[in-house]
Length: 183
Image (tube, rainbow, N blue to C red; front, side, top):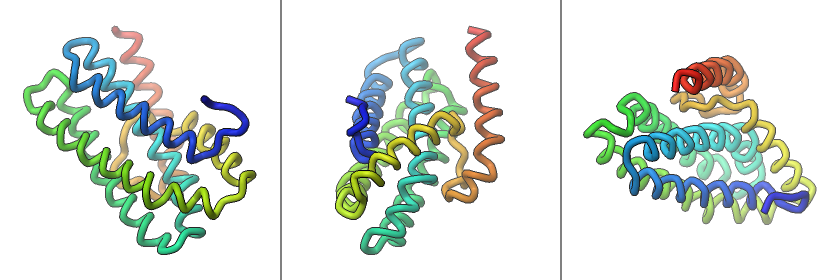
C-alpha cells in the first residue's frame, strides 16, 4: 500500500506486480476488454520506464557496484521493449500478428523486471538511506505524472528524457484525450 513509509523499491515492485496482472489480462481477454487492458499496460510501462530512466537508474549507476554495466544492460532491454511496444501499439490488439509478438514482449519484459528485482533493487535498498529511498519514490511519482504515455524508443537517458520527454508527453496526452473523446 502506498504511504509515507513506502520506498522507491516498494513502489516499483508494486508496479511490476500490476504490470504482470495487466499482461495476464491482455492474454486472457479479447475485444474491448483486451484493448483497454493493453492501453493501461502500455501507459503504465511508458511512465514507469521513463521514471526509472530519470530517477532510479542514475542513482544505481552512481551508487551500486558495477552500476554502469547493470544500468547499461537494463537500458538496452528498455530500448528493445519500447520498440516492441511501439510495434504492438501500431498493430493493435485485434491484429493476428499481435499475439505472437505480445508473447515475446511479455517474456522480455518479465526477464527485464527479474533483472531489476534481483540485481538493481536490492543494491539500491542497501546503498540508499531511508530518506533517499522515500525521496526517490516521490520523485518517481512526479516523473510518472509528467511522463509520455506512449513508448519512445531511443529516449532512455535522463538527458534525452528531459529534452524530448515534455514535448512527447504533451503530444501523447493530447492524442490520448482525442482518442478517449472519440470512443
